[in-house]
Image (cartoon, rainbow, N blue to C red; front, top):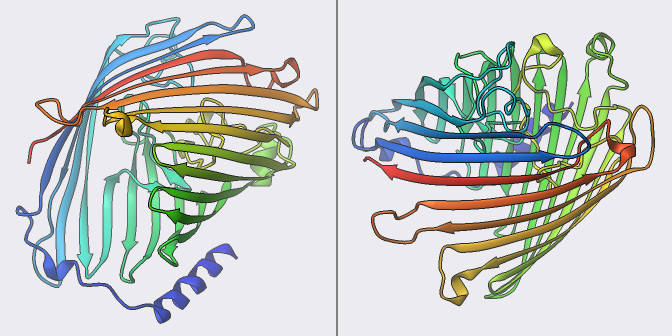
Length: 428
């Protein structure tokens, strides 16, 4: 039903909006518009768990190469995208790996991890006017299927994706993917995905208002629907108020619920954030709420179908209160107070700081009700502005997460530290 509504909305926009210029007509050629980039990433995550749980940490060095050709000239343009990934484990041997939220190097059955991993992929793409069809290995960034690029290596998916921008302000996406390559493992289908269909789009209604609707179906096991509305109210040159609403509905197939011991099949979760920006400062207040009868709360999907997951990677969650914890338990309500500072106004361009305090309550588990959790988040990031190391970024992030005893079935207390150094190099 949601898919039908998306189609009707899109048709209405098509009839009411002028078409854009033809990108394919402006094509310079396969070689002339091509690019080759390499990202060198050194990443470290340490989790100091509480309540008797073993600490986990992983450290690695990665090289992420991406090639994107231009399109051949003519009515139908043809091109190629490709990537090559390599990661070397610097720390995180047996006993320290295994935290699902870190996942730099997949743990084998004997508890060990590979010393390194390498993989690659390629896709062919076709463009007519402003519509592109891509088939092969790719990294989609959609609210219902988003590749994870906040660890050592990114995920990738194999399948077909159509992206259309024929109408100014309107983007439509439709795709089907039949394999998922886990970020911590080699192989084209290490995640165990059978198939996932995605459909949706976003539209810039006015200069200040944008909306989106998306839906996905993982081999008739997990259905996911997403809605977004974002409005920016400018007061003057240096002040504005941004309202951002995000919502998901996830529904599991009844047979999956029975076979995997899940209670309930439905979850609805939404967040509303208000951010006031004034000069270099930003202040955020957000509320998030989870409802429904599923004891999983928001259903990610996850890896490894043979372990009761559905294999879609499980990283698609565009919600305000998502840091170390995603505050997405059954019946959970959470509030956030956030602050951001851009040091460029004080003579240090490229340096920024972000803080957030989030508290969740009303958590339901199989054994209790009324559980709580709270997180204090801090992040400092610096991007080099000029010189040989231009665009090199250093990001330090920490979280202090405390979970009540009533909520221990859902989450675990701990202190987390992340250090990421990214150095992007444009070869051509």
